[in-house]
Length: 290
Ligand code: PAF
Image (cartoon, rainbow, N blue to C red; front, top):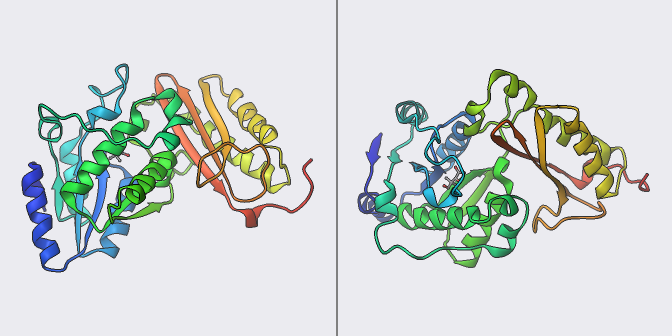
């Protein structure tokens, strides 16, 4: 496995492969890799000739009070996982090479970014959209993979790829969960043992919402209340938001008439946890709202 740090060398490597007619798969990450990343890497490996994983803790997607400085950076373990999974290149740029002096261009996806996570983290999606656009420009992948856990991020990336004609296929893969349902995330490692147990309440709430819809509930506010009430049983958890939305536009729904996305964000101690489930229309009992 090659470790490439300079954007120029990365671009030259990709250019050579493209000239040979090989396909490049790409998994962008901020490191602290876990089994969710492993699943993305494996899925990419199966679909492409060559595979690049980027490890870059992107400063522009962190707010001033967020955890940039203490974001985990276990680079040796990350490289080991990449080697185990047959990654060809680990691209590890520095902030100075990604954002050199004079850098000023930002990519925004305003409609998607204004909602949900965008309210709590107003600059987050511009930072993500900008770094993903830059990474795509450097790595020039044919295919890039993202996890459903960060649903809103995946939708923002899809939008920008379409809007800017970037020519990258985006593959959004299902969330990988711990046995008790907690969605895998690099930030889970911040949870104390007690808070780790409490954290399962988020997935339980989403499951309660899903069951309510499957049982015939059609008023979004009712389903939202059920999810909130579930989390309120856990004293360590603070609700940031629960929402029922259109899976394509992320616009909030008042009535459930088809496929629906249940989104949730809670805080346990200092750790923010996000999760979501999509309830397909085919799983919903066809009967009047209770
Ligand atoms: O999901 C992440 O790890 C990051 O937001 C991403 C897509 C690598 C951009 O920095």
